[in-house]
Structures are given as structure tokens and as C-alpha cells.
Length: 222
Image 1 (tube, one colour):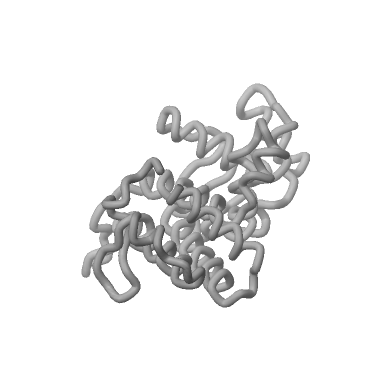
Image 2 (cartoon, one colour):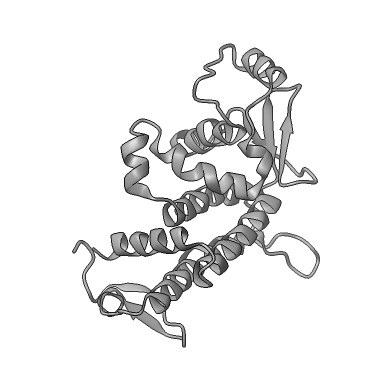
């Protein structure tokens, strides 16, 4: 039990805080999953969302598109841990575990991200970077995970994926060999996906997600 019972876990459904020990005593699966969502709403969604708010003049209250983009990538991976069968992924993807976890979420955000990069994209990507390792780039989402998520986390600089005020959340530049993300629209798309995922978990339409979410909660608690 790595986290003590008297440590804050999240918010109760009726309001007020709930501790790890109190969550550990719950036996109603539906309540447990609602508490899990409440935790993520409080500690992830609401806090990250502060970076997307505007004032009455239409200016961002906290202008930090890079930080919002990085945090959205963290949120994507968190949701991936919730809906995926993590033990199976760890068994089947020893060297690409994190990529396998996030791929289904990127597909939910933008179905085009699940496509294989075109020959035109590969060619332009190689020209841009001076080399091309085709094997890990099986989907456009791999470009985001490998060349934005990883390089951001290890140096706060993206390669192959850039941010700008594009009219769509994700723009694939086939002839240029890179992807452009609008951090604000990307975050909004993630929030919609997140709410839809939990709606399906809680209404029983996705029994596999339901069981995986319970397993995720158990990993937090045990």
C-alpha cells in the first residue's frame, strides 16, 4: 500500500474530500468509478483547463499554449491507462508500451491519426530530419508520441510536430512532413473524448473499458 489511508484521493460525489482509505472501503463498482472520474475532474481536467480560459476581452487569462499542449499529452496517456488492458499491453509491447497505451486515444481525438503516414509524408519527413526510421512510424499518432510527447518531456522542444493557431485541432502537412496542433482546440477535443469515454464506462456500453477502469483504480489504491 504505497499511499497512506489518510492521503487525499479526490472529491466525493456529494462534495468534500475523500481519502485513499475511504475509497479502499468502497464495494459498489459504480460509485468507485464515479469517484475515479471525480478525482480526474478535480486533479486533471479542472486544473489543466485553467490554461484555456479567456477574460471578458477574449484574451487568455494564462497564456501558455506550450504548457497546455504538454499537459494534454499527459491527459491522453492518463485516459489510455484507464481504458486499456495494461498487463496485456506490457506483455505484447515490451519496447513500445507507452505508444500502445496512447494510440487508441489519439484515434478517438482524430480518426486520421490512426492512418499510416503517406509516402509523400515519409519523403518530406526524411528531408526535414535528414533521416527516416519508418518502423516506429506506423500511424500519424506515432509522430505525435515520438516526436512531440517524448521530445517535449525530455527537452521542451518538439520535432516533427509543431503548435500554431490552425483552424482544426490537428493538421497533417503531407507535403511538409510534419503535424501542426492547435493546443486549445486539441484540448477541447480531448475533453469531449474524455467525457464520452466515461459516459460509456458508466452506462455499461463498454464493459471492457469498465473493467479496465476498475483495474486502473485498483492500481492507484494498492
